[in-house]
Image (cartoon, rainbow over the protein chains, first blue to last red):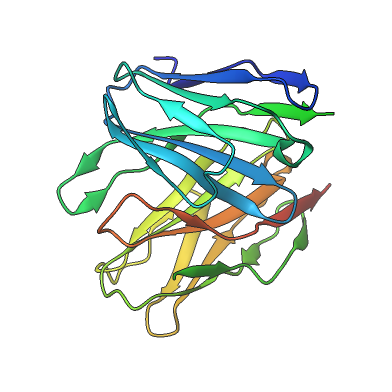
Amino acid sequence: NAGVTQTPKFRVLKTGQSMTLLCAQDMNHEYMYWYRQDPGMGLRLIHYSVGEGTTAKGEVPDGYNVSRLKKQNFLLGLESAAPSQTSVYFCASSYWSSGSPDTQYFGPGTRLTVL
Amino acid sequence: AQTVTQSQPEMSVQEAETVTLSCTYDTSESDYYLFWYKQPPSRQMILVIRQEAYKQQNATENRFSVNFQKAAKSFSLKISDSQLGDAAMYFCAYNPGSNYKLTFGKGTLLTVNP
């Protein structure tokens, strides 16, 4: 099992450019998440998905869009990148048992720099 | 809103010694879940230990154990026989059990001195 993988690992963008980050998981998890990690801020949830075809906003959704066309993939899009979106982005996935959250498993992260 | 506080931005420990990382949280829930994640320089987030609030017994995973004090809303991580490979950022996280949301603390950077 590869677990959770993310593509790319590093990226540099210019202000106004667009890009898509890809997350893939092979654990058949229903739930998938996108976080950003900034120095001194811990991890903050951007968007999440409870299943194929469904997405929802997290704590810091502005400037990002997501799609979950297949159960194993969760895409994070930046339509017009801004320097404030310079961050490390993590994808995670988990099961959801009735009344009990399962552990979230994380990908290796993508370091994005917006100039 | 739930908050998770890690009051120690940095900690250091000598190899083979024991260190305790602090975490407190704020919640009105009675059933919830707590986690410690480790993030080494590779950036990978690795689950260290998980605790269900309804269980009075403290969780243990090899050299890692927690001291869960529900009334005090405290969830500290003890690392015994510290090894160089334990050097990492450690994050405490809270989940209310009723939804997806995982709230993280800001982390504690642990240095292990040889």
